[in-house]
Amino acid sequence: MTTYHFKAQALTPIHVGCGCEIEPTEFLIKDEKLVQFNTAQVIENLPPEAKERFIAFTDRADLKEIQNFLRHHLDVERHGISTIDTAAGFRSEYAVKASNPNNQFRVDMMPRNPHTGQVYVPGSSIKGAIRTAVVNYFTNLDPETRPVVHEHVKNERIDNKKGQALEENALNCLKKDTHKDIFRLIHVRDAVLPHSSTRIDRAVNSGAKGIQMWVERIKSRADQATPPEFIVSIRMDTMAMKHSSVKKNLGRTISIDTLFDACNRFYWGRMVAEGNRFDEKASDGASWKSIEKTFPLGRLENEKVLSINPSVSFWNDPEFRNRCMLLRIGHFSHFESLSVDELRRGWNVKKKEPITDIGSTRTRCVMEKGKDAMPFGWLMLTLDQDKDVKAY
Image (cartoon, rainbow, N blue to C red; front, side):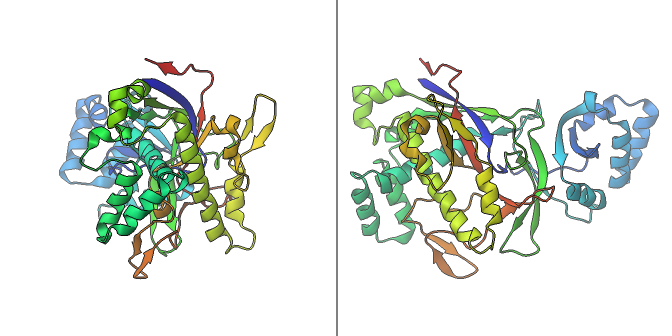
Protein backbone atom coordinates (compact mmCIF):
# COMPACT_ATOMS: atom_id res chain seq x y z
CA MET A 1 0.00 0.00 0.00
CA THR A 2 1.08 3.56 -0.69
CA THR A 3 -0.67 6.21 1.39
CA TYR A 4 -0.82 9.81 0.22
CA HIS A 5 -1.73 12.40 2.84
CA PHE A 6 -3.41 15.62 1.74
CA LYS A 7 -4.17 18.82 3.59
CA ALA A 8 -7.77 19.59 2.75
CA GLN A 9 -9.66 22.87 2.85
CA ALA A 10 -13.14 23.73 1.66
CA LEU A 11 -13.03 26.50 -0.92
CA THR A 12 -16.77 27.00 -0.69
CA PRO A 13 -19.33 25.64 1.82
CA ILE A 14 -19.63 21.84 1.76
CA HIS A 15 -22.60 19.87 3.03
CA VAL A 16 -22.48 16.08 3.14
CA GLY A 17 -25.84 14.76 4.22
CA CYS A 18 -26.30 11.84 6.58
CA GLY A 19 -30.07 11.58 6.72
CA CYS A 20 -30.03 13.06 10.25
CA GLU A 21 -32.00 16.05 11.46
CA ILE A 22 -31.84 17.94 14.72
CA GLU A 23 -33.95 16.65 17.59
CA PRO A 24 -35.45 19.46 19.72
CA THR A 25 -34.47 17.66 22.94
CA GLU A 26 -30.86 17.01 21.92
CA PHE A 27 -29.87 20.47 20.63
CA LEU A 28 -30.27 23.93 22.14
CA ILE A 29 -29.17 27.45 21.26
CA LYS A 30 -26.72 28.74 23.86
CA ASP A 31 -24.39 31.74 23.42
CA GLU A 32 -25.31 31.95 19.71
CA LYS A 33 -24.25 28.34 19.12
CA LEU A 34 -26.25 25.21 18.56
CA VAL A 35 -25.16 22.82 21.31
CA GLN A 36 -25.61 19.09 20.89
CA PHE A 37 -25.76 17.35 24.24
CA ASN A 38 -26.54 14.05 25.91
CA THR A 39 -30.02 14.40 27.42
CA ALA A 40 -29.61 11.31 29.59
CA GLN A 41 -26.50 12.74 31.24
CA VAL A 42 -28.25 16.02 31.99
CA ILE A 43 -31.14 14.19 33.67
CA GLU A 44 -28.83 11.81 35.53
CA ASN A 45 -27.07 14.71 37.25
CA LEU A 46 -30.29 16.37 38.43
CA PRO A 47 -31.41 16.38 42.08
CA PRO A 48 -34.62 14.35 42.78
CA GLU A 49 -36.93 17.38 42.83
CA ALA A 50 -35.69 18.62 39.45
CA LYS A 51 -36.08 15.14 37.97
CA GLU A 52 -39.72 15.10 39.06
CA ARG A 53 -40.32 18.47 37.38
CA PHE A 54 -38.73 17.20 34.17
CA ILE A 55 -40.88 14.06 34.21
CA ALA A 56 -43.98 16.23 34.62
CA PHE A 57 -43.02 18.24 31.53
CA THR A 58 -42.50 15.06 29.50
CA ASP A 59 -45.84 13.63 30.69
CA ARG A 60 -47.55 16.74 29.34
CA ALA A 61 -45.40 16.63 26.16
CA ASP A 62 -44.66 20.30 26.77
CA LEU A 63 -41.78 20.74 24.35
CA LYS A 64 -41.27 24.42 25.13
CA GLU A 65 -40.96 23.79 28.87
CA ILE A 66 -38.69 20.77 28.28
CA GLN A 67 -36.33 22.90 26.19
CA ASN A 68 -36.40 25.75 28.70
CA PHE A 69 -35.69 23.29 31.54
CA LEU A 70 -32.78 21.69 29.71
CA ARG A 71 -31.35 25.08 28.76
CA HIS A 72 -31.11 26.09 32.42
CA HIS A 73 -29.63 22.78 33.58
CA LEU A 74 -27.23 22.22 30.71
CA ASP A 75 -23.53 22.38 31.54
CA VAL A 76 -21.79 22.64 28.17
CA GLU A 77 -18.47 21.45 29.58
CA ARG A 78 -20.01 18.34 31.16
CA HIS A 79 -22.88 17.48 28.86
CA GLY A 80 -21.99 19.02 25.51
CA ILE A 81 -21.00 16.71 22.66
CA SER A 82 -20.44 19.39 20.04
CA THR A 83 -21.10 23.07 19.39
CA ILE A 84 -21.99 24.50 16.00
CA ASP A 85 -21.85 28.14 14.92
CA THR A 86 -25.15 29.47 13.60
CA ALA A 87 -26.39 32.22 11.33
CA ALA A 88 -28.41 35.02 12.95
CA GLY A 89 -31.42 34.12 10.80
CA PHE A 90 -31.25 30.55 12.00
CA ARG A 91 -31.30 31.57 15.66
CA SER A 92 -34.35 33.72 15.09
CA GLU A 93 -36.24 30.97 13.28
CA TYR A 94 -35.17 28.38 15.83
CA ALA A 95 -36.59 30.47 18.66
CA VAL A 96 -39.95 30.66 16.90
CA LYS A 97 -40.31 27.15 15.48
CA ALA A 98 -38.15 24.65 17.34
CA SER A 99 -40.30 24.58 20.47
CA ASN A 100 -43.58 24.26 18.58
CA PRO A 101 -44.36 20.65 17.63
CA ASN A 102 -46.85 21.94 15.05
CA ASN A 103 -44.11 23.68 13.09
CA GLN A 104 -41.73 21.79 10.86
CA PHE A 105 -38.20 22.87 11.62
CA ARG A 106 -35.71 20.79 9.71
CA VAL A 107 -31.94 21.10 9.74
CA ASP A 108 -29.92 18.64 7.66
CA MET A 109 -26.86 17.68 9.66
CA MET A 110 -23.39 16.45 8.70
CA PRO A 111 -22.32 12.91 9.69
CA ARG A 112 -20.58 12.80 13.05
CA ASN A 113 -19.06 10.29 15.42
CA PRO A 114 -21.82 9.52 17.95
CA HIS A 115 -19.28 9.13 20.79
CA THR A 116 -17.04 12.15 20.23
CA GLY A 117 -19.43 14.44 18.34
CA GLN A 118 -16.75 15.19 15.75
CA VAL A 119 -17.96 15.79 12.21
CA TYR A 120 -16.35 13.80 9.42
CA VAL A 121 -16.40 13.67 5.63
CA PRO A 122 -17.06 10.09 4.51
CA GLY A 123 -14.23 8.66 2.48
CA SER A 124 -16.86 7.30 0.11
CA SER A 125 -17.85 10.87 -0.86
CA ILE A 126 -14.29 11.74 -1.84
CA LYS A 127 -13.71 8.41 -3.56
CA GLY A 128 -16.94 8.81 -5.54
CA ALA A 129 -15.83 12.23 -6.80
CA ILE A 130 -12.47 10.80 -7.85
CA ARG A 131 -14.15 7.87 -9.58
CA THR A 132 -16.35 10.21 -11.66
CA ALA A 133 -13.28 12.14 -12.80
CA VAL A 134 -11.40 8.96 -13.70
CA VAL A 135 -14.36 7.63 -15.69
CA ASN A 136 -14.42 10.95 -17.52
CA TYR A 137 -10.66 10.69 -18.11
CA PHE A 138 -10.90 7.37 -19.94
CA THR A 139 -14.10 8.47 -21.70
CA ASN A 140 -12.92 11.81 -23.05
CA LEU A 141 -9.25 12.56 -22.37
CA ASP A 142 -7.27 9.39 -23.03
CA PRO A 143 -6.87 9.26 -26.84
CA GLU A 144 -6.67 5.46 -26.89
CA THR A 145 -9.81 4.75 -24.87
CA ARG A 146 -12.04 7.64 -25.95
CA PRO A 147 -13.22 6.26 -29.33
CA VAL A 148 -13.90 2.83 -27.83
CA VAL A 149 -16.04 4.16 -24.98
CA HIS A 150 -18.01 6.53 -27.19
CA GLU A 151 -18.67 3.79 -29.74
CA HIS A 152 -20.00 1.37 -27.10
CA VAL A 153 -22.27 4.02 -25.60
CA LYS A 154 -23.56 4.93 -29.05
CA ASN A 155 -24.29 1.28 -29.85
CA GLU A 156 -26.22 0.66 -26.63
CA ARG A 157 -29.83 0.88 -27.77
CA ILE A 158 -31.50 0.81 -24.35
CA ASP A 159 -31.37 4.32 -22.91
CA ASN A 160 -31.34 3.34 -19.24
CA LYS A 161 -28.35 1.07 -19.85
CA LYS A 162 -26.16 3.67 -21.52
CA GLY A 163 -24.79 4.85 -18.17
CA GLN A 164 -23.71 1.34 -17.26
CA ALA A 165 -22.18 0.84 -20.70
CA LEU A 166 -20.23 4.07 -20.28
CA GLU A 167 -18.72 3.16 -16.91
CA GLU A 168 -18.03 -0.45 -17.84
CA ASN A 169 -16.12 0.54 -20.96
CA ALA A 170 -14.36 3.49 -19.36
CA LEU A 171 -13.00 1.23 -16.60
CA ASN A 172 -12.85 -1.82 -18.90
CA CYS A 173 -14.72 -3.81 -16.29
CA LEU A 174 -18.19 -5.32 -16.30
CA LYS A 175 -20.36 -4.32 -13.36
CA LYS A 176 -20.47 -7.92 -12.11
CA ASP A 177 -16.68 -8.37 -12.33
CA THR A 178 -15.82 -6.42 -9.21
CA HIS A 179 -12.41 -8.11 -8.95
CA LYS A 180 -11.39 -6.23 -12.11
CA ASP A 181 -12.43 -2.81 -10.82
CA ILE A 182 -9.31 -0.70 -10.23
CA PHE A 183 -11.09 1.18 -7.45
CA ARG A 184 -11.08 -1.87 -5.21
CA LEU A 185 -7.36 -1.10 -4.84
CA ILE A 186 -7.97 2.54 -3.93
CA HIS A 187 -9.16 3.43 -0.43
CA VAL A 188 -10.07 6.80 1.06
CA ARG A 189 -10.39 7.07 4.82
CA ASP A 190 -13.11 9.07 6.52
CA ALA A 191 -11.70 12.55 7.14
CA VAL A 192 -12.30 13.80 10.68
CA LEU A 193 -12.80 17.55 10.98
CA PRO A 194 -11.39 19.63 13.85
CA HIS A 195 -13.84 20.90 16.45
CA SER A 196 -15.83 24.02 15.48
CA SER A 197 -15.35 23.34 11.75
CA THR A 198 -19.00 23.67 10.78
CA ARG A 199 -21.83 26.17 10.96
CA ILE A 200 -25.51 26.25 10.07
CA ASP A 201 -26.67 28.42 7.19
CA ARG A 202 -29.52 28.66 4.75
CA ALA A 203 -29.35 26.97 1.34
CA VAL A 204 -31.49 28.50 -1.40
CA ASN A 205 -32.33 27.21 -4.86
CA SER A 206 -32.49 29.84 -7.57
CA GLY A 207 -35.17 27.92 -9.46
CA ALA A 208 -37.45 27.06 -6.54
CA LYS A 209 -38.74 30.26 -5.01
CA GLY A 210 -39.84 29.95 -1.42
CA ILE A 211 -37.93 26.73 -0.80
CA GLN A 212 -35.30 27.33 1.86
CA MET A 213 -33.26 24.77 3.73
CA TRP A 214 -31.09 24.96 6.81
CA VAL A 215 -27.96 22.84 6.53
CA GLU A 216 -24.87 22.20 8.59
CA ARG A 217 -21.87 22.82 6.37
CA ILE A 218 -18.09 23.04 6.54
CA LYS A 219 -16.57 26.47 7.03
CA SER A 220 -14.67 27.49 3.91
CA ARG A 221 -12.20 29.90 2.41
CA ALA A 222 -15.23 31.88 1.29
CA ASP A 223 -15.88 32.61 4.99
CA GLN A 224 -12.38 33.34 6.19
CA ALA A 225 -8.80 33.55 4.96
CA THR A 226 -7.72 30.46 6.90
CA PRO A 227 -10.55 27.92 7.06
CA PRO A 228 -10.35 24.67 9.07
CA GLU A 229 -7.81 22.22 7.69
CA PHE A 230 -8.23 18.46 7.83
CA ILE A 231 -6.38 15.44 6.51
CA VAL A 232 -7.53 13.28 3.63
CA SER A 233 -5.61 10.02 3.21
CA ILE A 234 -5.74 8.12 -0.07
CA ARG A 235 -4.29 4.61 -0.10
CA MET A 236 -3.40 2.93 -3.35
CA ASP A 237 -2.36 -0.72 -3.44
CA THR A 238 0.46 0.00 -5.85
CA MET A 239 2.16 -3.34 -5.18
CA ALA A 240 -0.93 -5.24 -6.29
CA MET A 241 -1.30 -3.02 -9.35
CA LYS A 242 2.23 -3.96 -10.42
CA HIS A 243 1.86 -7.67 -9.71
CA SER A 244 1.69 -9.51 -13.03
CA SER A 245 -1.32 -11.72 -12.24
CA VAL A 246 -3.31 -8.87 -10.66
CA LYS A 247 -2.40 -6.41 -13.40
CA LYS A 248 -3.51 -8.93 -16.01
CA ASN A 249 -6.98 -9.17 -14.47
CA LEU A 250 -7.55 -5.47 -13.82
CA GLY A 251 -9.59 -3.48 -16.30
CA ARG A 252 -7.33 -0.45 -15.91
CA THR A 253 -4.21 0.50 -14.01
CA ILE A 254 -3.75 4.07 -12.82
CA SER A 255 -1.20 6.06 -10.87
CA ILE A 256 -1.49 8.95 -8.45
CA ASP A 257 -0.52 11.24 -11.35
CA THR A 258 -3.56 9.98 -13.26
CA LEU A 259 -5.77 10.89 -10.30
CA PHE A 260 -4.34 14.41 -10.20
CA ASP A 261 -4.74 14.89 -13.94
CA ALA A 262 -8.24 13.39 -14.13
CA CYS A 263 -9.63 15.36 -11.18
CA ASN A 264 -8.10 18.71 -12.05
CA ARG A 265 -9.08 18.66 -15.69
CA PHE A 266 -12.62 17.46 -15.02
CA TYR A 267 -13.51 19.68 -12.08
CA TRP A 268 -11.85 22.79 -13.45
CA GLY A 269 -13.96 22.34 -16.55
CA ARG A 270 -17.07 22.04 -14.42
CA MET A 271 -16.22 25.14 -12.42
CA VAL A 272 -15.54 27.21 -15.52
CA ALA A 273 -18.78 26.04 -17.16
CA GLU A 274 -20.77 26.91 -14.05
CA GLY A 275 -19.21 30.36 -13.87
CA ASN A 276 -19.87 31.05 -17.55
CA ARG A 277 -23.45 29.81 -17.38
CA PHE A 278 -24.67 31.56 -14.28
CA ASP A 279 -22.50 34.62 -13.80
CA GLU A 280 -22.89 35.90 -17.34
CA LYS A 281 -26.45 36.79 -16.37
CA ALA A 282 -25.15 39.18 -13.72
CA SER A 283 -23.75 42.51 -14.87
CA ASP A 284 -20.77 42.32 -12.53
CA GLY A 285 -20.33 38.54 -12.30
CA ALA A 286 -20.09 39.07 -8.56
CA SER A 287 -20.46 35.48 -7.41
CA TRP A 288 -17.86 34.13 -9.85
CA LYS A 289 -15.39 36.80 -8.79
CA SER A 290 -16.02 35.80 -5.19
CA ILE A 291 -15.36 32.17 -6.04
CA GLU A 292 -12.11 33.07 -7.76
CA LYS A 293 -10.95 34.97 -4.68
CA THR A 294 -11.27 31.82 -2.58
CA PHE A 295 -8.44 30.04 -4.38
CA PRO A 296 -5.12 29.86 -2.57
CA LEU A 297 -1.79 30.80 -4.10
CA GLY A 298 0.81 28.12 -4.71
CA ARG A 299 4.51 28.73 -4.22
CA LEU A 300 6.75 26.48 -6.27
CA GLU A 301 10.28 25.46 -5.33
CA ASN A 302 11.70 28.12 -7.67
CA GLU A 303 9.77 30.74 -5.66
CA LYS A 304 7.33 31.26 -8.51
CA VAL A 305 3.92 32.16 -7.14
CA LEU A 306 1.12 30.59 -9.14
CA SER A 307 -2.43 31.80 -8.71
CA ILE A 308 -5.04 29.11 -9.21
CA ASN A 309 -6.99 30.85 -11.93
CA PRO A 310 -9.61 29.00 -13.99
CA SER A 311 -8.55 30.87 -17.11
CA VAL A 312 -5.08 29.29 -16.92
CA SER A 313 -4.47 25.65 -17.81
CA PHE A 314 -2.46 25.21 -14.65
CA TRP A 315 -2.59 21.41 -14.86
CA ASN A 316 0.00 21.61 -17.63
CA ASP A 317 2.53 22.69 -15.03
CA PRO A 318 3.78 19.32 -13.71
CA GLU A 319 5.20 20.83 -10.53
CA PHE A 320 1.86 22.23 -9.51
CA ARG A 321 -0.25 19.43 -10.92
CA ASN A 322 1.39 16.96 -8.58
CA ARG A 323 0.60 19.02 -5.52
CA CYS A 324 -3.07 20.08 -5.68
CA MET A 325 -6.27 18.27 -6.54
CA LEU A 326 -9.61 20.00 -7.07
CA LEU A 327 -12.80 18.07 -6.23
CA ARG A 328 -16.48 18.72 -5.83
CA ILE A 329 -18.20 16.66 -3.17
CA GLY A 330 -21.35 16.47 -1.12
CA HIS A 331 -24.95 17.53 -1.55
CA PHE A 332 -25.83 20.30 -4.05
CA SER A 333 -22.90 19.34 -6.31
CA HIS A 334 -25.34 19.31 -9.25
CA PHE A 335 -25.84 16.98 -12.16
CA GLU A 336 -22.87 17.99 -14.29
CA SER A 337 -20.35 17.35 -11.51
CA LEU A 338 -21.70 13.84 -11.05
CA SER A 339 -21.59 12.78 -14.71
CA VAL A 340 -19.01 12.81 -17.48
CA ASP A 341 -18.61 15.42 -20.20
CA GLU A 342 -20.24 15.04 -23.64
CA LEU A 343 -22.32 11.98 -22.71
CA ARG A 344 -24.60 13.36 -19.99
CA ARG A 345 -28.14 12.06 -20.02
CA GLY A 346 -30.40 13.56 -17.40
CA TRP A 347 -34.00 14.68 -17.36
CA ASN A 348 -35.47 18.04 -16.34
CA VAL A 349 -38.82 17.12 -14.81
CA LYS A 350 -40.09 20.71 -14.72
CA LYS A 351 -39.23 21.51 -18.34
CA LYS A 352 -39.83 17.94 -19.56
CA GLU A 353 -36.64 17.93 -21.57
CA PRO A 354 -33.28 16.11 -21.39
CA ILE A 355 -30.26 17.57 -19.62
CA THR A 356 -27.08 17.10 -21.58
CA ASP A 357 -24.67 19.60 -20.07
CA ILE A 358 -25.63 21.81 -17.14
CA GLY A 359 -28.81 22.34 -15.15
CA SER A 360 -30.89 25.49 -15.15
CA THR A 361 -30.72 26.25 -11.42
CA ARG A 362 -28.13 26.44 -8.67
CA THR A 363 -28.39 25.81 -4.96
CA ARG A 364 -26.17 28.23 -3.08
CA CYS A 365 -25.28 28.96 0.50
CA VAL A 366 -26.41 32.28 1.93
CA MET A 367 -23.36 33.99 3.44
CA GLU A 368 -23.27 36.57 6.19
CA LYS A 369 -21.63 40.00 6.42
CA GLY A 370 -22.80 41.03 2.96
CA LYS A 371 -20.89 38.33 1.11
CA ASP A 372 -22.22 36.84 -2.12
CA ALA A 373 -24.09 33.56 -1.95
CA MET A 374 -21.69 30.73 -2.77
CA PRO A 375 -22.02 27.40 -4.56
CA PHE A 376 -21.60 24.25 -2.52
CA GLY A 377 -19.03 21.51 -2.68
CA TRP A 378 -15.65 22.80 -3.86
CA LEU A 379 -12.73 21.16 -2.06
CA MET A 380 -8.99 21.58 -2.55
CA LEU A 381 -6.53 18.85 -1.57
CA THR A 382 -2.85 19.73 -1.28
CA LEU A 383 -0.29 16.95 -1.03
CA ASP A 384 1.27 17.16 2.42
CA GLN A 385 4.97 17.30 1.64
CA ASP A 386 5.80 17.48 5.35
CA LYS A 387 4.62 13.88 5.69
CA ASP A 388 6.43 11.04 4.02
CA VAL A 389 4.35 9.01 1.61
CA LYS A 390 3.96 5.69 3.36
CA ALA A 391 4.42 2.51 1.37
CA TYR A 392 3.91 -0.90 2.92
